[in-house]
Amino acid sequence: MGIRAVTISACLLMGFHASSAQAIDLMEAWQGAIGNDRGYAVAEAGHGVVAPRQKQAAALWRPNVVLNAGAGYGRDNTDTRGAYFAGPGFGQSEDIAFSTSVNSGTTHNWALTATQPLYDPKRRAEQQQLLMSADQSDLEWNAARQSLMQSVAERYFDLAVAQESLRVLQQQKQAVERLATEMRDRFQLGATPITDTHESEARLASVQAQVLYAEMEVETRKNILADTTGLSPEQLFALLPQRVSEELMQTPLEQWISEAESGNFDIRMKAIAGDLARQEARKFTLESSVKLDAIAQAGRDYISGSGDFGSASNAQTSGMVGVQVSVPLFTGGYRSAREEEALRLADKADAEMALARQQVAQSIRATWLNLKAGSGRVQALTQALEASRLRLDATTLGHQVGDRTTLDVINAENDVASAELALTQAKVNQVLNQIRLAALAGKLDESVLTVFNRDMLAGN
Image (tube, rainbow, N blue to C red):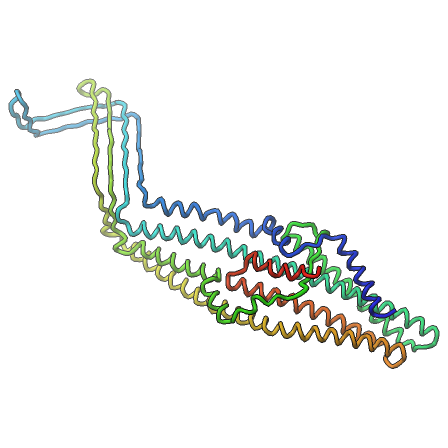
């Protein structure tokens, strides 16, 4: 019984475990996360303010109509002295006095006022702030969506690597168990020294411990992915990429950095923060303090009751159409202080944006270089795995004819397992680095996930 038989046995064992779980692909994990992740739910709720803020911005330049009305009890006394009176049939009179009195009466009033802003720089700045704030909320939602997409991919492939590590270790454990049994049998026949038996049993104990740790790691990764997707941990089984797409790697580094300048969500949000601060400063400039409104008013005040001269009532009706100018003359320094504060905050936001650009460019360079180096690493590890397998076959054969020791076989088994896991991790790193690169440029969306999902499903 050789290595090929052990490999087939291990694959059948892992197939049995996978059949008891639900093999989900990357897109299924993403769809589950959209409806389950708590952090994304917060971002989704916050995204709801976008439309109301846009409506507020549009409403700022529409007419405002206000109706005021009131009723109650009151008094109204009027004394007029030195009045002049003239009327047909009454002649002319000077130094006339008039008095009216309502000491206790019912009163009611109403006033209808309509205003239309004509010139108001402060209102214009407020409108721009509302629109920018809506854009910022939209960016925050998109950034949260992209962050969740990246997190799902990382957690998904963490589980896939943990499962592959467990599979390889279980395969290695079976091979070492076979070798340990063979060494015990050969020792009893006097064909090998006791040291071969001890070496194989020591290695078996070590692999068994590694298998236990790998099983715990798989359960941990399942629970983490389950928290994100809402699926039961017992049902989860992740798939590994069968090939690594190089579509994103074809884009030059300079283009990635250029696209990040306009697409990275963190940079864009910091740019809006600076614009918001500048609009805030504009609200408190001297020219923004003046405003001009078209205004139309109509109103009536009425009171009736008893007074010093008997029953009495007073009524006043008014109306006007025109324009109204408002010019603040002195604010005690408040206006200029607010303007200066906003300008300093704009400077701070610009500095933060410059820092974000630098950090994003550095991250893109590092990720892009890792991708380029990773392609060669995958090829080298593929060759190393083939060489390790050939070495294991040769070492096993040499052990059978007495040219190799048991320790040589154990080390060869370990080298194959290490090469398999290194290759798997390298392939996964290539996928994740491309996803991270797309996220840094603000281009990570479902179409990008679909590319890697296709590569993952190939051959499964």
